[in-house]
Length: 167
Image (cartoon, rainbow, N blue to C red):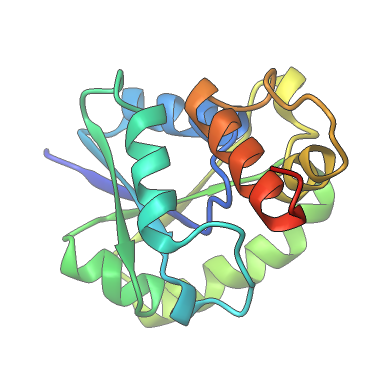
């Protein structure tokens, strides 16, 4: 059976925690599509444009042969259906994530009952990592290189320097 999974999110920016989830998923499913929410379809304001986030993801996961990133601007379930994905991957860092993710999985099941939600946890040392924390640390001049791909680190430095006028 050829199983396609999607891993939706904003990935602003992609972190090593995301990479870990994608790598784990790539061993479980035949194809993993990292579904990057388009800026217009998310209520979050993002540091990077949709195309920048897709490009950073494709760079960060280039060594994972059966994974790739693309953007979407619809309901996750509609995108999953379009991609013929039978699995929606969600990452859980802590118990506090579970309530929201459980509700989301239930709603996704109502909208696309043919798909299953699979929860994956990152490696222990990556459990506290989030894009918002990485952005905050970087914006205050902290070193985020241990938490992101080198190209993502460079992009963050340039974006934050450009936004603060310290260039």
